[in-house]
Image (cartoon, rainbow, N blue to C red):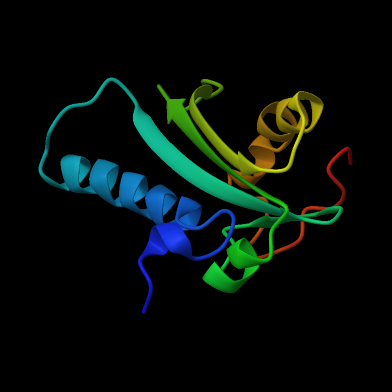
Length: 121
């Protein structure tokens, strides 16, 4: 099996999101106090469709891949986007449309692997 860095265009974004989520959960489980809770998500753009939490196969066929890390600092607060990683073919407008307008998927309003519609949608 080839190393993750050699498989697909957006390879590893979903795995990195899972690792970030696992790390923050491990800190919480250990009772380590944090100023906020990080939540990482990944998206793959295949044509005009955005896929949340893409599989390795979906990442391999993606035109671009995007990883976002949000920090929640309380129940009522809106999260801050504290990290973005993008790879592949995209423009600045497409990326700017992703993070703020897709915050609903962080709050559980979409299911993993579900299409989120067109990039500008």
